[in-house]
Image (cartoon, rainbow, N blue to C red; front, side, top):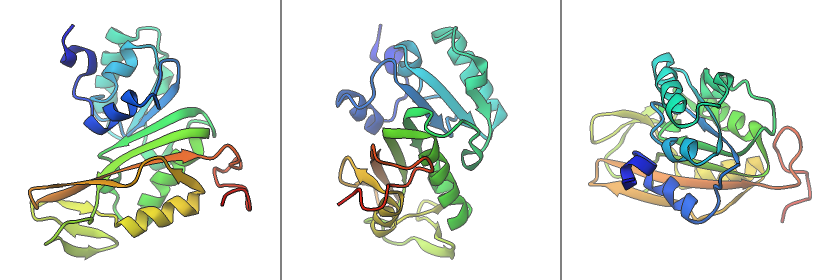
Length: 215
């Protein structure tokens, strides 16, 4: 089996999480905004309990076909057509939640917060939230359009976060950074940041930390 057959087009930074053992077979994992399932090939093949959502019905249909080949016993009800912020899974359902190149499509601050809060709600205490998203970190020349949306030098429009924004949201959630914020600036055209959080074991049912439980 080739590496491509085993891992597909997996995000290299998600692959890093696999190498660190933060994702392991048997874990319940949600890919929130799964697209065509490029990050799910290995997970489906290796016995993870996979769920996935996307607002695009064609994308979810593609993932269903992928699951039929690689994990035929996976219940179809775990692959759902729905927006990230409208996630219908019960609270504390997953050991890990993946959001790869999704959050920067937020229309505004309210939708961004809605997406993050929904993913945090369905994450179990002790679980891992992995996000990779466009940011303003190290990027020069992005033109502000309002509500943290920007016109990027590559001509695309994206919702961009700053380091301060991500750190503030981390504190609001009561999460712990598992890694420092890591950012790649792609030839001065766009900037992509990896944001990896752990949900504390002392989190309340709504996902926030118990007051006084964290340093």
